[in-house]
Image (cartoon, rainbow, N blue to C red; front, side, top):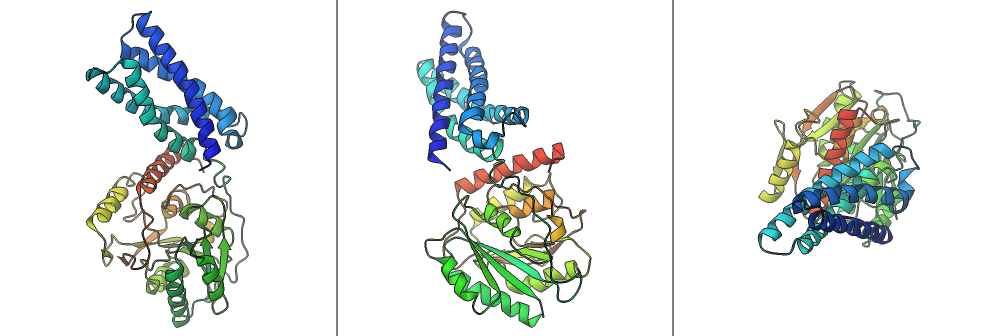
Length: 381
């Protein structure tokens, strides 16, 4: 996130505070309205002024002039409703405790500002995150279904120096034992532990290429950028931490090579699949994430990060995921005609390095879900 952009957002927010507080004071003291009614009116007026200023200034590089301004305005208002709930809850609670209503209102605004900034950045003005990326057609090594058709695997990395040295030889051992014509693209977000350098050295022994990124970091943008660089007619995504066993790759490729599916998901939640060495907290979070995605797909494990698909599934598709669940984006938006198959695998928690899962990733997932539900309702790419 740009600190300069955040400062602009805060400056716009400060102007909204002036509008909000001014109307709250005037309507309560002079118009005789109940303070909660005055607060709602003050917030609604400040929402309008804040949107116009943010669209013209804070997110000018993402707004593309007047194009889509109405849709952005509706999104901004929807996000602001969340802020309204937070603000009003704080206002009512603190006033009930005897705190002066203007001070209580300021506290409510402070509680809501981070919600408003993060969600608006990730959703309302998200268009330039991947530039509404549309992937160009690629020349592949063979016709679909031929034995020597190239399989490309993308591994997004950040501080995975130890793991990348283990996962790459395992993948190519599977390729060799199963006569798979494969390549690996390591997409690294300029890791401080120099994962990109180690992966580059592996390229001397294996068919490995490295894409080192310096901007717009994150797992999903890394994978989406990788989509534009791979050469295979079949594309796969796997983690570097060996939680996705390379030995499952042949089983996942079989339905694609046999013409029985366009998208194959490595699934923990079908017969034969499972999870090992995962703390209960992570299991609960994963199950909860799966449940709230049920309205988007019937796939049993829609948040899986282990999947393969034919290139045509994403060619020409506008992908704009947030957070870690790029697979869910492909499931919802991909051109697979619901020809999806789930193949069981056993997920094993990483033994080296630390998980990237945290509060930010959970918030990103909620924002991503909201965007995908909006896509499903609106039928937009």
